[in-house]
Each structure stands twice: as C-alpha cells, then as structure tokens.
Amino acid sequence: MVEIKPGPELDRAVAEAIGLKSATIRKASERDTLYDHCYVSYRDWEELRGIDHQEYPQSDVPLRTFQPRVDLNAAFASAEKLGLFQQYALTCLVDNWRITPAVERPWFADPVLARAPTAALAICTAILKLNKKE
Image: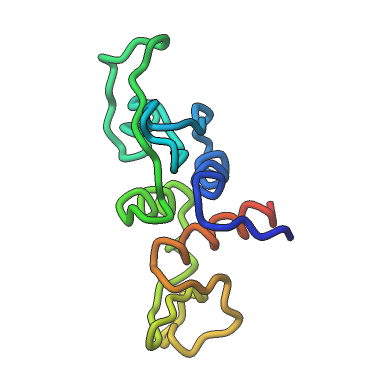
C-alpha cells in the first residue's frame, strides 16, 4: 500500500473513502501560494454531520474546507460515517495514538490497525486501511 503523506491528498482520500463525491483540491486564494486545501460542499458536510440541509441547491453549492488530518471534528464525523468505532477503539500510549480492536483493554490489543502522532491522523489512516480492505 502506498502511504499518503499528511496534506490535502490525504484529506481528499478520506473524503472519497467515506463517499463525499465533491472533494476537490485547490488553493484557498490567489495570495495563498504555500498551501493547497481539500474542499467539500457544505451540503456534503452537513449530511456527514447528520444535518438535513435543503437550502443549498445542487449547483453553485458553497464549499467548506475538509481537513480530517488536523480537524478532529471532521475525523470523528468521518469515522462515524464508516462505523469505525463499532469495532475499533482509539487509544493513546505515551505520544502514540492507535486504532486497535475494541476489547476490554484496547491499549494492549493487537493488531494495531493504525498508529500516528495525533488522534486525527490515526483515524484517517484507519479509514484508508479499512477502505482498502473492502
């Protein structure tokens, strides 16, 4: 499996893994020359969070940045969409966040599905690994 480094490509891969079709990568503005960002439509974002928003028409939908690698709310919403925490647990040992099978003592569980320095990155890695298995 090719590892995707943290960045907008990882965000887009997570968006696609959970079924958000509107994911696109572009610069935030003309002056923003350093960073690309992943965007999804507000409609997709609201549906992901379980909010029924019918005020946005299908075309000309405003965009929202989608960065589950750094935004814990987006990471958890993505995990919920896939039901990740029905079978797995998020644990932290020292400075290492892990996604392990949900057992009585998950911090000792093996095998570790994902491991990362932040909770959001661990969740994103687990989502992509589970998506590859399907």
